[in-house]
Length: 490
Ligand code: NAI
Ligand code: MG
Image 1 (cartoon, protein in one colour):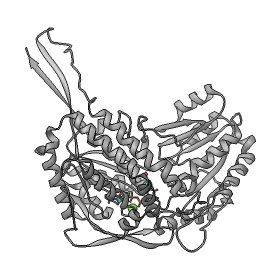
Image 2: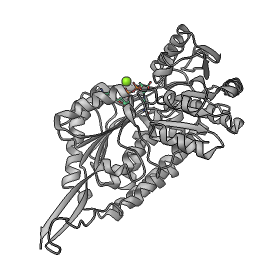
Image 3: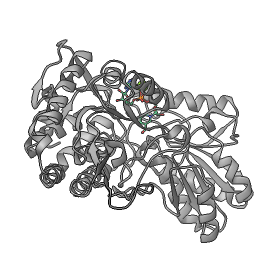
Image 4: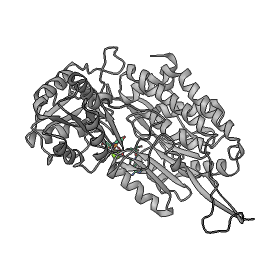
């Protein structure tokens, strides 16, 4: 471990409000744990309603009257770019913090979470100077009598509530577009993984963002999160997490009708046809579910396999599952670490029990691994059907259900038979079939002969109960801007 990381986790952490690191108004702290051991890693100031109030007041002041309000867009973009550079500068530190706090393999955090977060800020740095309105010819007015145009303005003070599966990257997904649009933010990281967001707060200061533009209030969802979602002076709330809590956020936001964007759960179909490159499809199907221990909203958790190759693909994915080395994230041989928390491990093991009781069979894995830390074996379930909980509900762990299908007509309704609609995968060499099927799947992202390909430029989000609005690309800017029509008589 880098000495700077040891020092960071040993420190007592405060919250960032109005450019200063402060204790919780209550004086309380909460622990964050190392999921590989279950031991306490760090203690952090525990935000609650009073701290959220202070943070919203600071964000409002920064938005209305601070230097941010007058800052030229190019300067805003420069600060955001600098934040990306600073993440890169401290990339090893971030990778280690992420691995310690979340449990993910250090080598994965190094090549995925951290560089993607830096790139995300750079992508949105470029947008600061490109958010524009239009001039609108009025259809019913005599020509030359009016000048009508639109302005695209920042939506205001934004509350952002993020999960623990990609702690730094989720902070980047939320902060990048909000800042480029000129909003001010109160960010609440997940209670399981607050450390990288707090380190990011230090870099936000180092980059030179004016005070109050980004406030970071760690704490629990039911207290700090709920207070942020309900706050009457927050203009918009952006949430990533469970569908259940997404609905609570929506209720809480109703008080002042704040704008809401939601990136929620999934139960994504991954469809393998018998004309696919089967070896690639097997590796792709394994990675679609086992990447990040299955703790991905878009995990390919329902694997549909054309019946003639069902046994071959199940066998191949099971071999992959069994070859995955499940170890603490810092172990150089680790391919998969522990789940994030005891609660998450118990939730996933509860699904494994329910699957067994309903008649599913684990051909790989199927249980917890060891009795220290929160490790679960990569699992492949067969003999499942569409009525089982393991097929209908999001497990958010390394568990895939494999089911046979006969042809495209058979697999389309099966794929869409879920309350979710986040992502889907298709494996075939027949491009006509692939694109025809992509059009029929009710999902925000469809990957063809690949899976989990993300890019800051590529919109991501859900149909149905997987959410409202899109992250990334230029689409996300809709979430953080208001359109003002100005009409002048000439
Ligand atoms: P969660 O939805 O409770 O937590 C996500 C965030 O919401 C955290 O920051 C949490 O503090 C906050 N939160 C919780 N209750 C809140 C409330 N009443 N008001 C405002 N904020 C609140 O997710 P949890 O409990 O950690 O995981 C449960 C399940 O949720 C997982 O098994 C998985 O199925 C799903 N999930 C989906 C994620 C995604 O990326 N779409 C990420 C994390 C969890
Ligand atoms: Mg929860």
